[in-house]
Image (cartoon, rainbow, N blue to C red):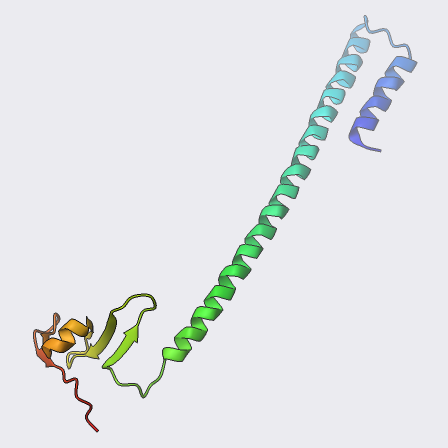
Length: 145
């Protein structure tokens, strides 16, 4: 039996007993039964609201899981692409093509440990100054074997 059903049962009992609601005891019992009825209605409303909120939270959780799966799938793809570039034997001066851009970006490590990116224009000049230590770095476009 639910709280609402129990409250209705008590109300029916009170009505069936033909209590005198004009006496002090009758007034008190009537007030208690009315209070229990009001409380039962509020509790029922709270339960319904809680169920609705729980359903909404379940939907949000499912959406977040889908987003997480999507992001993790993208991260796995990026990790795979990063693994393709991680090669211990590769030289520091190497060209990288960034997709749609027409400019190739090169990378070199200075003696101070600073890794510097530069483009073809700097390569054609043949040298540049390290922004970290001020040392002049010289480049050659000829292939040394």
